[in-house]
Amino acid sequence: MQLQDAQTEAPKIRAFEVNNRMVLAIAVPMTLAFLTTPLLGLVDTAVVGRLGDAALIGGLAMAAILFDLVFTTFNFLRSSTTGLVAQAMGRGDPTEEQAVFWRSLMISVAAGLAIIAATPLLLTVGLPLLGAEGEVAAAASTYLVIRALSAPAALANYAILGYVLGRGMGGTGLFLQTIINGTNIVLSIWLGLGLDFGLKGVAAATVMAEITGCAVGFWIIHHRFDRHDSPSWHRIIDRSSIMKLMALNGDIMIRSFALVAAFAWFTRMGAGFGETTLAANAILMNFFMVAGYYLDGFATAAEQIAGRAIGARNRPAFAKAVKLTLVWGFALAGFTTVFFLLFGATVVEWMTTLQSVRQEAGTYLFWAALTALAGVLAFEMDGVYIGATWSRDMRNMMLLSLALFIILSLALTEVLGNQGLWISLNVFLAARGFTLLAILPRRMDRAFGAA
Image 1 (spheres, rainbow, N blue to C red):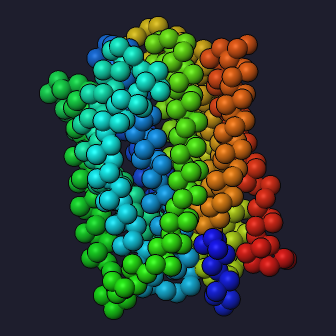
Image 2: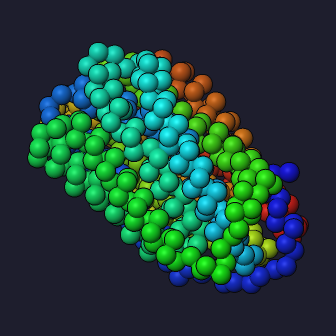
Image 3: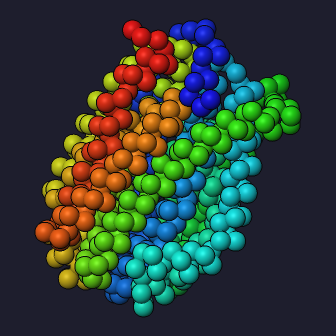
């Protein structure tokens, strides 16, 4: 039986109030925290862009897609930890909160070591699948070999952040993300441009930042644990608990893999239009990343509060969490779209000195800015479904939307070229949100009983 049905084991209703203050207490610090991640992407792209070689920008984009394909595939370590910790909190079970953390941490370290071992496979199989050739492939390989060393620490940071978010500790989450991404940004500029290590310096900066963040995060969490609630080793490795975790992780892994596969497909299709278009798409995709992490703060609030409501068997709290996070999410998405419509051209000029890339990016600026509004519902629904651990529905709706994206992109690029590719991406983002919203009432009735 899937983990999403486990709430039937605890019929007692635990009351708590959901209001804007609760939502903002989680969302605001995490919005600020998540914003540092696309800022890092902007800085890395700008550092490489100022080296004056379009192939280096394309290589960074290819390598980043491959690492997203790998790391985001393991994002279940963060998502499942958040949902399970929040539900344990809702049930009033601090021992299980700690047990979930230790299980996720063990999986993350093992997976990180496996990624290092699989790096040669990424080079020989992954890059050709994305269409990387010549100087673009060489640049991507340089970045991949170095950054792979960050894998164990990077995945451990997923488990650490998942626990923090599951507990609703937005301020701590902000601190940890600032440590990781702030360190990365400073080192990227210093090593990449200051010491003239270029792309190698950008990759090395990521490795050092992930290790630093992991050490700080682990110390904070372990220091805060109440030793009276510490789980036994037998409970941590309990077979049924691990199987439930893996069932949940499997669905989220497929969902995450499909999401990154969509962006890999976008990059692969864009590469067919030449280096200049590939570079322009890579720069514009940072607009979506900014919007995504910007909106993830309220999606995170939805995760924590929805998960807590599931654990507490509190339907009114769950419904209010959905409503409030959607209102805030759409407001921020609208603001983000307007901002990039007004100032996107200036951002592009800052990110690259190549006039041909600037002009190409300007052609598709509208569609890149629209991704915030197109994707906001998907972000918020993902938060709700992750917190509730309704992983199977997330997986199914993602696969349906991915199939639509591929079919639509093949058809529209034949007629509209790269513009058709951007239109297809916006349709894909919107489809994910609306399909999950459509089945939400039925899932709530199953979880809490028909109203």
